[in-house]
Length: 343
Image 1 (cartoon, rainbow, N blue to C red):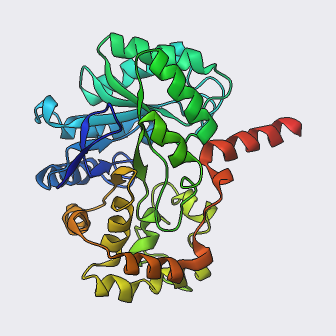
Image 2: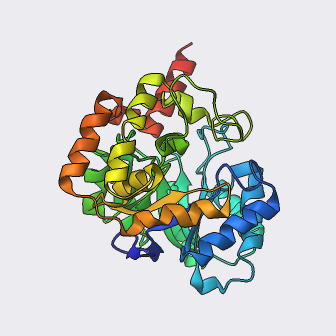
């Protein structure tokens, strides 16, 4: 495993972090979820990511139990706040000062710890002044309940303003957690350039595009039983939302197989290695439904991708790659709320 500092002012994190958004308390039983956490620890992963809304809080509980015997200073524990108050898509009031205080205490209790290493605003709340949200984060840091703060899935203008206010409050943002992978690159044009001068590092989620980049979904084929496309309360809706399961996309993904073999990697390793080679990506959050997946995929950490190979990857994927910055999640949700209000 390798390690890097998260942003200019954050903690040192493992290049691969372990996340449990669709596993603990949901897709896996508790014993299997704990086994995956232990496998991550054995592999040198020190950074664990969850959220208060995952499995209605059970994901935090399972992660807390799995890490209970680990010395607290040996792991970087990350969780999120902000979804749930206005529905699972976030929304009005999710980042109010009073709600942040209450949700933070609930997360600390479920995780069985006295502090969160990186506390992240889960989606943007356009009904709460940013000043109020950043003041609440500053209060949490001053109380010793939070060490560092970040955000997840915010657009460039939101990041710029929040970064300024956070610095003024004495709690600079250290991280942004967006979706990012070979197929989904909407952060490249605006979000990453906004983060660089603010010293914000990218801790990205879905580096394997929900499993699509592993090659296990075949064009025209049945969805594999137990996969993210069919499990976890009816499947991962983002796979369909982003059209990752369309045959034209799956055909391009299958065409990556010989390029992965040429690099001496599996398809999942190739996809993860590509993400980790992007300069602003500090850590990539992976999940697992079995302990063995973790060790196999971590070969990507030391993989070397030649520039010629990455250019060929881009050529193979072609227009299957989504790049439109307007598809940053907070922007799409805001647009959806405006359409709802107009009707």
